[in-house]
Amino acid sequence: MTALLTAVLAFGALAGCTASQTGGNPTTAQSAGTKQTSSEPTSDGPDAGLSIAKYVSNPCSILTASQVTTLGSVRAPEPGTGELGPNCVWRGQDVIKNSKYTVHTTENKSFEDIINNVKANPVFTDKKIDGVRVISTSQTDASTGCLTTLQASKTDSVTVQVATAADERAAKPACTETERVAQLIITNLKG
Figure 1 (cartoon, helix red, strand yellow):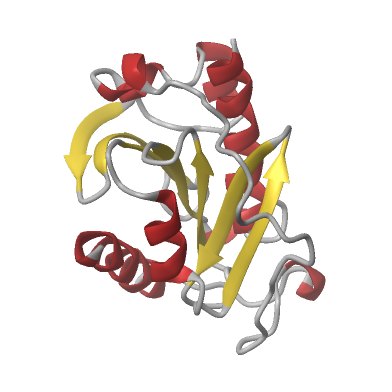
Figure 2: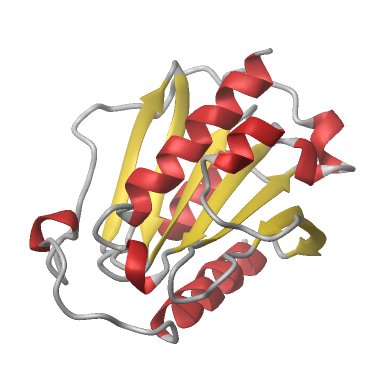
């Protein structure tokens, strides 16, 4: 639990260090201090029963080549390991123009514990996408980044993290983008 909180805090610090841009569409981000929550109660529901086993050893294969093209101008995938487990990073070609995407595969960590660690964040939603429970969260107003975690099972999950490039903030609101990528992953997990 502490490791997940550390990862979320590190993401918040990273998001705070990105270049900022004035202007844009003010309706794409929430005002600071506004807590976003889901009105649909999703706790106590059954888990999705999806398997992430084949992606843990190769997290960069969790998105197809055609799905990766929807991320925009990104570099070749970089596999790695972090606090949330094995991951894959697609860095933008230009840090100002292109967003950075990270997908984490997490095994043997309670989804409910993950929720408890982030539900007090200023941005937190708990809902279902294609019948799969997902949470989206940001320690700020989600203007520069967001995390969306999908529940594969009671102890396995996949987290999509986006650090939104300054030039893409108006066109790609962070939590909307993480949820879009999570939906692609859900499609792949359902096969």
